[in-house]
Length: 291
Image 1 (tube, rainbow, N blue to C red):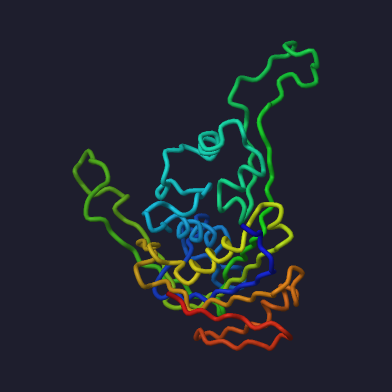
Image 2 (image 1 turned 135 degrees about the horizontal axis):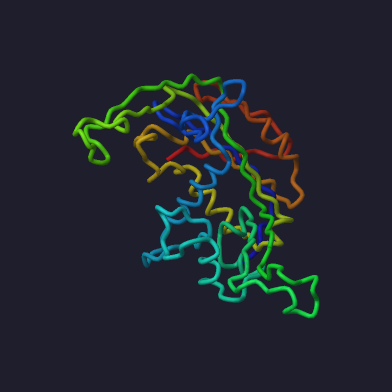
């Protein structure tokens, strides 16, 4: 398969309705905000959703189409207990940049740092003629720089989080006096309505290093409109998060007709989810409706 031939930029408009798009664990799981009050969905969160959707894709025979390295524990499709365990089971002793990129979609797309300690015991001082290596780790450290970058999503207007107190109807554990324990009380947070937008790019030069192909880019293009399919939770009930539009700029050349900054700035998103696109010479986006 041919590695990515053309530079690609993309943008996604999201709508949140009475949901918590991305809770902040350092702030009681309240919706993430920057210092100016704008809502934020981290790039890590967005790439997690992309990985999850790719993991769910199956071919006509019912087999998984894509192998994903960074799998969340609640969604993993193998018996690996850690990233190191997954790498060792899949590649045995043949962990290299090339083998890792060939094995896992997300590694050749987003990149990854393989930094694992040796499984064996450490050497003791005096066991080696070169005492400068004594006690050193003989593990592996392989950095992979991926061609696909995704920026955090930010709301078009400042958000106003709402909080409600909730009560569980039963104790988590039996109490000595039989009364309700303090853990029956809790809080839930949400925003009533907000429009978010995030941007991304695909670099052909870096794609040559990892083997990221045209087919791989099309796979991401296909799953972006349904980013929140099968992503429901208590914080994000079904229907509360939706993709409004996906914008896909294919430059038609490796170097790109415009910088990613200018391409992204050409999209103006309004608080109601409508948009305007400035004309860029020789570059028109494909506009795809959300799923």
